[in-house]
Length: 306
Length: 326
Image (tube, rainbow over all chains, first blue to last red; front, side):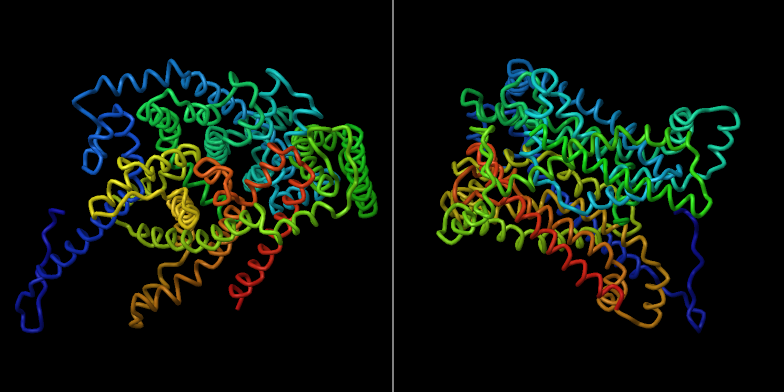
């Protein structure tokens, strides 16, 4: 920035002023940033509104209507904010449901990486008969839209496998853990790992599982992280399947399913209901900001291969 | 049902064993033998994935396919009769009679026609906006993508509050500044679906923006420089370099957004409810299978949807794919 520029000279040796060009460039930049800020506001204003709303009492909400105060928290009465949050977290057990969600997400992530990773490993590195059959089924299931079979899935889990009571959790975790798309991702990534690594380990006497866990997975940190992040977001945000499966089992509900029950509660104030939405969004936001790199990476590797 | 699934598994196993013996036979012929230890270990390692895929993906799909031709009712699960195409006849009769099925079809059509172009154009605009090497772009990207990670339940309830028919709702109090009387946006059949289109595009377009951005970075920058040297203006460069360079992203995005749009369900479910202006195909299918226990009819709707989505995807691939090579 501080570097001194040589003056530009025209044909007669007079200095040319470049100030005008600079100001137009600055003006262009200012326009760019203002546009960006306005567009960002378009995406963020509902979330700002949500945050502000969650700190207010019903009276304060009515009072701020039609003013900019709708987007600002009620600083004059911070006790109300505390009450709203305490009510949903403690009295309405949102903390407990959130913990359920975290548990399901962690189990799903671990299973997801191990099960799909092992399958991808075999498809990438092993010579076994029937391999093309597996690959064909994977590609077929990626292409065919399967999301419409939620009710038969319910019948399989509840009636055929008989997963009731605490075992219902398996019905939440397994469908979230199995993903043909992730198998495909792992397969593609593992194909890029040179054979030398495995062979060196094999000479040292390592078995297949040891090679997978000690060599292949550590070499695949980016893809593991991407899969884990998307799995977390998926499990945390999933609403329909858990609420169908756990209709009569409210204690086991993950947070999104419980949220619909809380929202329909007529005794809870509007501000407190909004606080429950904020509480539900905060963990996913933390994960999003912390794992941004892997989310973007996911698009680089996954987005365009299909 | 247990016996049927065992039967399906047996067929699955038979096909698999057939493929394996074929592969073994071929390898014998070529003289490239498989190592038995390797095979056993390999099969054991894919076994969990195969088992879970079979149970939680393949089996429900096949069940859904089968139920579509039966009168399976959750109220009397022991009495399942094969009814041929009766479920489909019933669905088309309901469409003809202007029942809920027609509203579901109409609302889904409105949603798809509205959201696919809106979301893709928004995403493309955002991607072009963010595709510069300027300080601070990363922050814009974070903001644009933020609604994507929030759950559908949260955004649905949040927008219900924003669009509240009361005078203190955000949009109504904003309109009141211009002297417009209070509106009930989500109960009005003319506007309900349009709001869901807008909200979905608002929430979803950050996702497609990132895919477009990774497509944009793959376009060689020397093409732009060459065009600039040749005196091509910005519009010309966009049409002749950016658009062809984004073909594969456009294909992928159109297909995924289209499929996602056809499945629209949670937003109308939480924001409007089971009224004619709120039915969509997925929502109607879900309610038929759960509230009304008519799994047969529900599966028939699912099958029709799957066929339709598959067909349109195929056509999109043909149309957009051909342009790419031409």
